[in-house]
Image 1 (cartoon, rainbow, N blue to C red):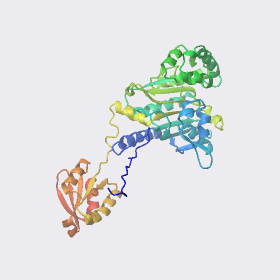
Image 2: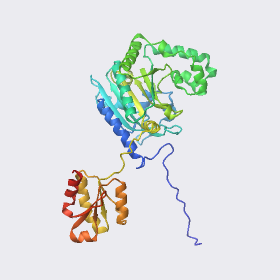
Image 3: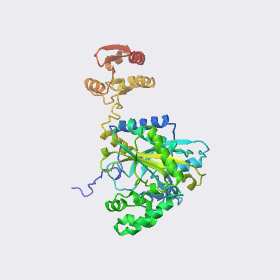
Image 4: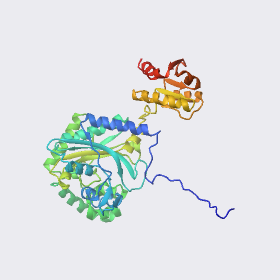
Length: 432
């Protein structure tokens, strides 16, 4: 072996743990569900807002709350070259509020916005839960009444149903407000302090920092303790009780069946009054589809005026999983179907057909060309599998005559036409 020769091993790069690629075969499902989301939000009067992928970390620390898993364990933070502490967004509501305040969008009337995009959380990857996930959501500002809560719930269910999901349930609770929640918090802390030795280590630590988050624990020992704990519904003030009863009455009037569950809380500190979750047994033990609720204090906490608000956020991966489990054929009719296949048999034929194909596309015809120069029968077979109605064939004979052969792929009938007449002939046939 030559002394100057060295073997080198190239390691194949892979996607980071907790992320995934959406490949061409999967993309139609994503595109279909995105169209469903966009159409539903438009019908309900919600305009799209797009915020940066990263924000000042303080946007999330102030709003989500210190002591939460998101801030303490899951948020991706980094220091940029200017010494600023930034974070990849772990959720959308706080950035949306920041943007609305920065650009003076709040005004006095209802502000209704929607969004979809990637969020980032460092957590243990599992089915339907990723470190880069995708979320859609909607927020309604400046409407204090229960009608806004119910509209957000109705929008949520509209998307779920349109995606093809058939089996799901919605659960409701009220988290109260600044006036009545402290009394409940005091009662809960008193109860849990007496049984602190029965709590999980995480919940025992939260007892001093963020006791309401214990209500969201999935630990079996915590659940056993919480089964006898006081619930918020016993401590609601008159205004919160009236609001919650209004939500329930409107849902009943709209024939929306919702279960009351006093154990439901949301994982973010800013929620007040109505909170809700949608889940489905079709998703197995990790059955959550989405959640949302009211957050009347958040805008003020971020430096804006006192502004009532309510919203929802749903993982797109979870929605796709639910649609699949329900047998939905979402996106199956959105593959790379074409109207016309352009079949070139040599380089000169490609140069002749490419401008014609481009003109056809500009005229609204779905067209494609196999640039591999494969045999004509293979190109025609693939064209038929992609749903093409016609093939435009050019080889040496056609070039010599300045013509192209148009073949009807259903009847196999062929017609020779001048190259200058191909696009016009195709348009006439496809629109006949």
